[in-house]
Length: 106
Image (cartoon, rainbow, N blue to C red; front, top):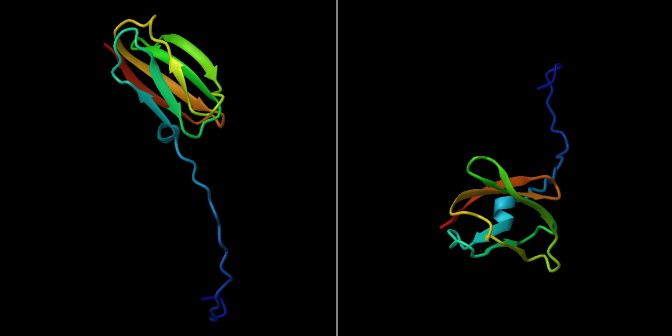
């Protein structure tokens, strides 16, 4: 109701908002756990370029690189230099959205 006691409806305004999936929904990592020396495959569904940083449990970066899969499908992460244990991988897309994922080397 207005200040003068009358009411009226305004035009409907439609707002379209595109919701971007998070990085975790666009990336899969396998095998997990991986045997010592066994490569870990990282499959990208909709990421053309990604920054990968691998951390040990102490928080130290043990690998860091930028990957641009030619066919947009994936990257093979060599693990031969990684000791058995728990690792975290931060995967960041070109839009700076990132996700922290855990993987294990047995």
